[in-house]
Image (tube, rainbow, N blue to C red):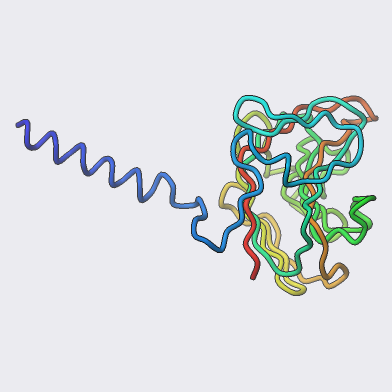
Length: 205
């Protein structure tokens, strides 16, 4: 009986190792920019957001808005990110920013995090102005930890939220540049909910 229990426990450990971490990227080709509460040294800050290390994540919840902008520029890449958002959080990942000092949807691809965006076609899971999500909203991030898996290869862009493809499109407007993490204002300019980044990794393609 004791031997059977040990075998069962061993199988449970193997099962967790194989399946519990199946979607987490690993390998020397992945560069980790945020890991728990470490990572602010890997970014340039613009704007007024109160970015800080807290509770095993990089967090912002106050200020008129701001960004963490990667110090390196990227052309073709994959991003893996773990984040926590509230229902009223306005955040996102901005890709290939053409002006790292003035990040926005008009100068980069914005993979949105905003469950209650006033125009929901570019809410959570969308690429603002380039790839819409269904309405009424079916992709939401508020109130839990989530993962984004983003691919940018040439003109091809695709986004997965929690392993579900939300958009896939072809667009060649922005060719390369840094990427940025956002803390944005809420609806009608009020302070939006918290954004927490627990893990951010990138792999060049």
